[in-house]
Image (cartoon, rainbow, N blue to C red; front, side, top):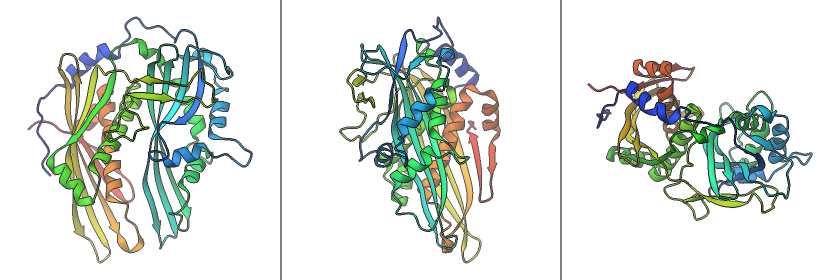
Amino acid sequence: MQRRAFLRKIVLSNLLIAFGGYFSCTSALARIPGTVTWGGVYPLGNKNSLPHVTGALGLATDEGITFNNLVLAELREINWSIASVDLRTGLKRKLTRYGLVMAFAYERVLTDLYSPKLDATQFDLRLIAYTILYDVEDRKIIAAFANRYRFFDSRPGDTTKTNLASLYFDLMIGDDGNLNLPKQAAKDISDFPFELKYRGKTFKVTSITGSKFAEESASALGMDLILYYDDIGFVATCAFSEKLLSPVIPYEKTRALTTDLIGEMKIIATDGEGALNTSVPLPEPEIAITVFHDGWDFKEKSLSDQRIQVTLATSFTISFKDQQSGTLLYEQGFFGQQDFVEIDSIGYKISRSARIYRMHEALLDRALLSIADSATRGALFDGISVENESEHTFLQAVEED
């Protein structure tokens, strides 16, 4: 697959000078003025768009403890006097100026794979949530941070028909050495630099597009390209916010359901009272982030009667543009390649659409981190190799010839 040439080359050192004004402190206040009331966790959508997490949030342990109960308990253990918000978790039925909620906006089942030979089912799941600080009186989002949660699990037997809402709930609250989401969510909320709302520009992933070859690549796999572009929109939004510790305007789906995010965000506090419940318009971005996909290609080589060596190659370009001036602030291409083995006879074959997702996820994480981290930037231009037992992955920033 040919790697697409740049439309314009912008040196990363100049990019950092330009972005310095956006990420640096001007005359920042140390904290949000006034107390902030916790409104709970809720799904930003409905059972059609978020079926599993919506179901999971309605479940409880044998003791009757819900996910919201667990997050609340963790939040109450935090010393909020040293955080960037003075969070209160006990104010009920009282009018408050500021509210804070955690809204799950995206879920994805990447792998739901049963292997007859291993007699086990492997799961690879994703969740993306926004933690949103908002002004109740002015109906305005002050700052939103995105976080992604990954769950990997293997269960004995064929559990592909398992109630995934129950599985999500088990994994979300699990404390067996894997991710315990209530603890992690509470830590993330307390660590978010909400004071950044006093700084710089507003950012949003506004467009995910691709080439004709990308359309052909998706068609060959039977993928819905519009839905996949929305996947990448959520991943890019989350990677930008996570890796740069920056507030971000929530991503809006290209093909949204009527109750999904379109121009405004519905906020539903878990206490059922009216003080924190509202809908707030999404702000207009000052800096637009776009991703252009070149597509992807799979090459096969037979190793034996059962084993096939497969090479996946893909590339895309990330751009940042100032919406007011039209100035292109940054444009950089990235290339990824992964070599892996497929064994059909034992069901050892992760779907190729999941492979593409994970490749683009890994590239986006490193690409956006490289904007602020010089070590990652240098490594990407040299090329990053990642090895494990079953695959080899190579990631690189593309330079002009």
